[in-house]
Amino acid sequence: MGKLIYTAIASLDGFVEDTQGKFDWAEPKEDVHTFINQLEDRNKTMLYGRKLYETMVAWESEDWLKDLPGYIQDYGRIWRSADKIVYSRTLKQVASSKTAIKSAFDAEEIKRMKDSLKTNIGIGGAELAGVALSYGLVDEIYLFLHPVVVGAGKPAFAKAIGPRLSLENTQRFEAGVVLLHYKL
Image (cartoon, rainbow, N blue to C red; front, top):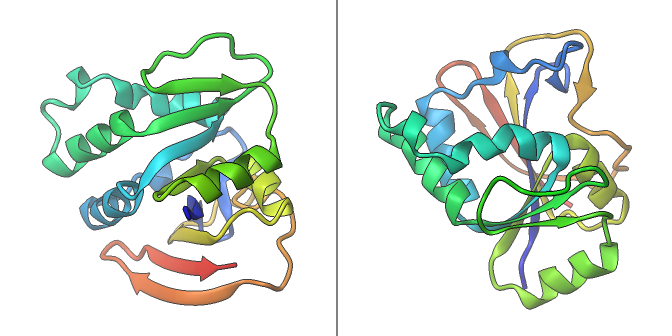
């Protein structure tokens, strides 16, 4: 049975974007990027909302990666190899291979997917993850907190989760980033 894993990079005050929708402060250094690569490589299916998908689809092209460090190129390979499902009512076509569009999130379909897969499923985007959390579908959360306070913006958790989080692990990275790993 697969697990549904929510991974987010957030500011210390819990935002994944600032009020202008920017997240340039969240660019992971090599140690964080390498850890995320190892984590994401276990997710053979990725669930995205439209906005995050439109940001992530840049990884479909290898051209811009060729002169970048190997750990960044590795993430591109991981992203391209994963099956992707994009939840959107407005997106009509995809710009990446191995990608399907669904007009609505179906909790029962995700439960069946988790039951049928032997690999993990990643979920990206605070709003989509919030929906999955509200249905009790998320099994683990990897929250990478960056040492920056943005004050306002899009929160990493769009909905309340409740008191059922169990801290499994913490890890500190070089640039002051801290990982909080929770099981639900």
